[in-house]
Image (cartoon, rainbow, N blue to C red):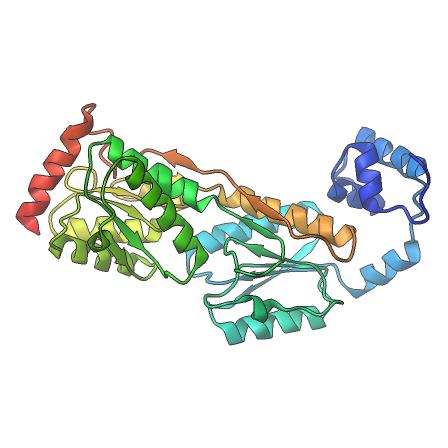
Length: 358
């Protein structure tokens, strides 16, 4: 490789065949890197003509070693688990996270971001508050890198890391169709949030592919809480549509829905099929254990941290990045799949009992 006037960390990473984060750790003298990997990075530094600006590095180290983590709602265990994934990764990279909760409040989000930028954090991973738009995230040219996590913002060119919402919801609905259900509800959250839009789209795609009608009466928007899930279930059981199953926007809604059934003397999986989304830690301990979509929350947190470190160590500005995780159906008891091997038997039983109790 020919020498360049100013070789970068990215040049070293490409030459050595490692990540920018690994190169950064070698430059800092971290003991978390295997000796053979460190030797390969140092050899790549020589090959690309990289000269370590120790004075600049010392200035940055003297200023801060902190990375901001701004979560939209830490009362929601999903965001708590996301924060843990990010924090673990930052710790392994030798950085100290600063955690803030905006409680989905725009004014609070603005204040938190401003404070973090003023105190010189190296970068920020932000799960945007509801109603955030691109204008709220207009940053000065001197701002450190900011990554959006889990909630896309239309028109915003900041890098984004999140779940495959449409694919996950589609798998959830397809599973219920395969069990023989024809009246499948969607218990949803805030329609203004792109996450809700994507999950509802995946649900609709599955119903269309199965030749089932998309009935407005089967959409039950609600708060993304356990209480919201219970309220959605009560409305569904009292509705003329009489659904026999539901794809839920998240696990909290699904857990609330199973509890509402129990209050009626009914059981998820036997009298009404439920599938959640997120695979929270408590999903497997729900009664009954919750069928859900595992959206790799911890892995997404780790990925967000890795990308942020790459931006911190790389050019001051980078083109937008979008990283989407996988989605895997985790079958437990709340959908009824384990009740019988006959796909139609579950929905037939649910339909008759739901009609009697609605």
